[in-house]
Length: 224
Ligand SMILES: CC(C)(COP(=O)(O)OP(=O)(O)OC[C@H]1O[C@@H](n2cnc3c(N)ncnc32)[C@H](O)[C@@H]1OP(=O)(O)O)[C@@H](O)C(=O)NCCC(=O)NCCS
Image (tube, rainbow, N blue to C red):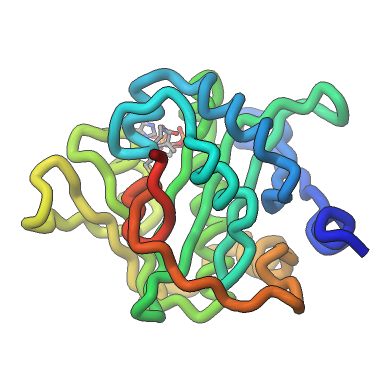
């Protein structure tokens, strides 16, 4: 069985309804999603790309893209959200969590297509990556966010993160949540805790974390 077949088998899409009534499909990323993700990144506005990747870029490098679609090891999870069905489905959001090298810490990053922002999708995906992080034993979930990124700071606060200002980079704040202090939100039990991910592939050896950045990218990958 190929990787793609296996990913299809263990990680089919799940449907969710956003508060406004729109339905979205969410599934883990697959190795063949590179073109889809690249097109999505290009469609984001420059502001959204800067906020997501903490710097100006127009697209992901081939290396970064290849790493992202293969990010299925060591407890990492990358989720994609789609609007529409089948051939007309459009990628409208992505979210990831990566386990940091020191263990017990997981880094998160996400983005929602501009036309879909402020409709609850970021909240849904944050819940999903948080549930996954709990499942793989993460205690502290963190992310680096541009100081000026009001939307992400708002989303993080709403999701129970606290906000800290590390001294290393004045442009960036750190969002942190100690998962041991709060029980999982209801969707964890109902859907996300049971969500199979390609991260659970039996044959995949743990990859060493890449000490560079994606959203913050201390643990994930650089856009360049
Ligand atoms: C940050 C981001 C992921 C939020 O996603 P979203 O789907 O719009 O978030 P939600 O609709 O679930 O909003 C949840 C809460 O976040 C806050 N929020 C979201 N967008 C906001 C905005 N533009 N201004 C202020 N607060 C905002 C609000 O508190 C909101 O709750 P409310 O609508 O009940 O007031 C989205 O704006 C985005 O993709 N931005 C570009 C990429 C990025 O910044 N990524 C984060 C760095 S890793």
